[in-house]
Image 1 (tube, rainbow, N blue to C red):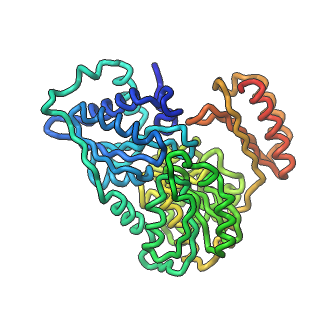
Image 2 (image 1 turned 180 degrees about the horizontal axis):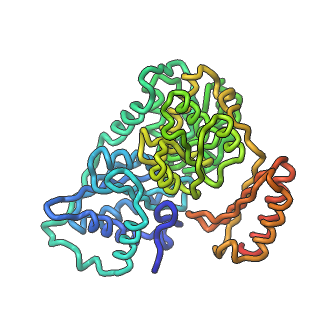
Image 3 (image 1 turned 90 degrees about the vertical axis):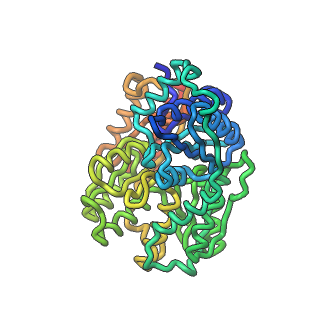
Length: 449
C-alpha cells in the first residue's frame, strides 16, 4: 500500500509528492469524511506555521473539508501544540497543522490531532490513506446545500496564551527575570513574547520577523549561537530557542551554555520528585538520550524507560506506564499534567519555574547531569534499507562498539521525516567519540548517499 504518513504526519518538499495541493485537498476530504456522524456537523480546526507554502496548503485542505459537508475553523499562524489545545478546548472533531517543524522553508507537512488533542493513531492514519488511494471520494460528496463553511477564530492566540500562563505556578512571581527568546521566524513569533511579558518577565525577542522563507534559517532550536551571544550581552537569566512550529525548545543558561532536552528533562523531573508529583517515580526518554541522563537518574533515584525516537512513541510509553513527564534530547518534552503533546513554551515555563523554585541560576541547576561526549552526523541518503541488512555498515558499527565496550554506545537510525541517516556515538573522550562517528558515517555515505 502507498504510504503518506511518516513518524510525525506527512512531510516533504512543497509542490513535490507527497506535499502537493492535490494530496492536501484529499487529506482534508478524508479527515472530514471520517469525522462525520448522524445528527452532528463536525468542525475541524486548521493552523499553520509561517512558511510561504502554508497559505496554499491551508486553502486546499479547507476546500477538501468543506466539500465533504464539514465546517472548517481557520486560526492562521499558530504553534502546533496550540492547535492541539484549541481542538480539545473547543470540542472540535479534529485539528490540522500545516508545518514541517524544524525543517527548512522549502519543506512543509501536515500533522493531525484527534478531538482529545492527541496525535492520530496508526489505525486512523491508515484509514485516511485508504480513502485517499481508493480515489473515489468524489462519490462521497454531499449535495450543494449541505456543503461546509469556513470561519475565522480571531481570539485563538489569546486563548492559547491564557492556557500557557495557567501552566506556570500561581505562587511564583517571575517579575524582574530577564529572558531572551529566539522564535525561529516561526509559529511562536507572536505568542512567545506575549506569554512571558504577561507574566512580568523582561523579554528580548530575536528572529520574530517571518517572511515565509526565513523560518529556521540560521536561528531557532538548531542554531543557538546568536541566542547564546545575546544572553551574555544582555546578562539575561536564560534564553530559549524554539523550532519552527513551537513544539521543541533548547535553552541557553546564564553562562551562555546550551542545554538540550536531556538536561531540561533531568531538571524538571527532580523538581517533580521533590514535590512528590513524579507519578510512579518514572520518566520516559528515548534511545537517543545521552548516557549522562542514565547516570543522573540513577543518582536521583528516578526510574526511566526507553521509547523509540519520536514524540508519539514517547507519549505511547507515558500513557502505557502512567508517567507524566517524558521527552527527547531534541528539546521535545511532554508534561502530561499540562498538555497532550510536546509544547516548547510549556517546557520553557517549567524550566523558568524550576529556577525560581530552587532560587539558583540555570547554570547551577544544569550540573545535575554531566553530558557524555557525543557526536551526531546526519547523512543525506538516496535509499533506506534496513541497517542490519547492509554488511558494511553493521561491520563498522560492530568495530566501534567493540572498541568502546561499556564506556560508550553507537546508534545508527534513519530520520522518520527526511531522507537522512543519523549516526550517533557516545564515548569516554571527545577524540574517541568523533573518530568512531566519522568512520561509521563515511561507510554510510559510501553505501547509501
